[in-house]
Length: 94
Image 1: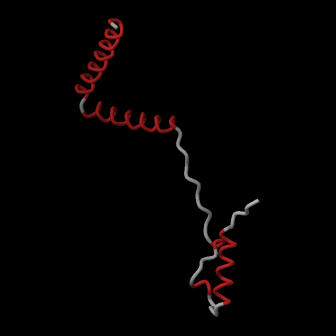
Image 2: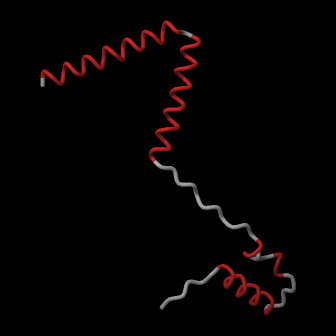
């Protein structure tokens, strides 16, 4: 069975080699991996979380638009309703 070499083992080997070659302060050349913080695991984002974030952003945009220009918002609602009606009609024709 193959054994995977750890960072600590590599560090130990390098420091022993450096000391054997006459270097007294190996910390100038190598960093002890046990002194480093643990690497954070990347956060996984689900499709639902992405959708909810996008939906939240869209709601914010619509809310801001409704405050700034309520007439334009009503025109957009009318267009959406009309496009839905037209797509339903197209489905019936097919």
